[in-house]
Amino acid sequence: MRARKMSQGMTLIESVLAIVILAIALITLTSFLFPSVQKSALPHYQVRAASLGQAVLNQILAVSFDEQSDRNGSLWRCDELDKQCTLPASLGQDKNEQPAFYNDVDDYIGCWYGANAQQQCQQGLSITRLLGGDEQDDYRNFVVNILVSYDYDNALSGQVTPHQTSSFKKIIVRVSVSNFTEYEFVAYKGNY
Image 1: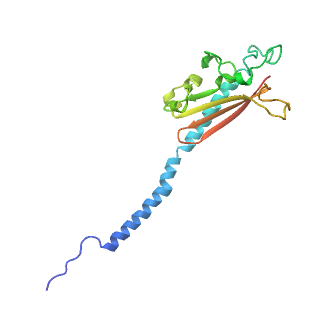
Image 2: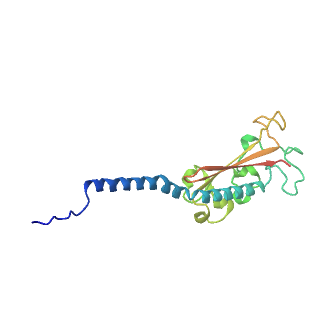
Image 3: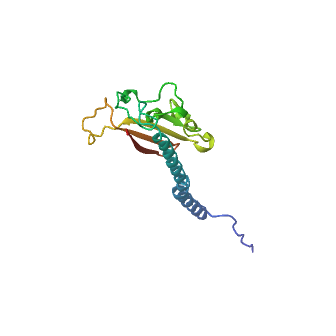
C-alpha cells in the first residue's frame, strides 16, 4: 500500500482568504494611519505661521501711521497742520526705499517669501529682508502677503468713501505654508 503524501503549500481557499485579510489591512492603513501621519505636521506649521504672522504685525505696528506723520515724539499727525495723509491710490512702498528704512505701515504692502516659495510671489522680497534670520531654516515654504488700506467703517464717521482717507488703516497679513491652509491676521493702526 502506498502512503498518502501530505500536500504542501496553500489551497485556493486559503490563498483567497489571505488576500482578503491583506486587503482589509491595507485599506485600514491607507484610510486611518497614513492620513494622520500626513496631518501630524499641521500643528507645527500652525504654530510657526502664527508666530510669523505676529512678528510681521509687530514690525508693521511699530512704525508711523503715514508718511506725513511726525516720527519724532508724535507732535502732529497727518491731516493736521496742512499735512495731508497719503491718498488710497498712493499707498505702497516709497520709491527706492529698502525694508530696513520703512517708516509707515503702507510701505510693507506686497508679497514676502521664504526659501522654496519665491515662485508664489510675482514680485516680492525675501522674508529675511523684513525680519532677519535664516531663510533656509526659519521661513522655508512660507509666503506672507501684506495688504494695507484705509478702513471705511461707516459707524465711525459715516461719510468716508474709497477716495478719501480715514483715521484707521486696516492691515491684513496672510501667511501661507506650502500645502496647508492660509492663515489671516488683521490689525488696525490709528492716526494718533
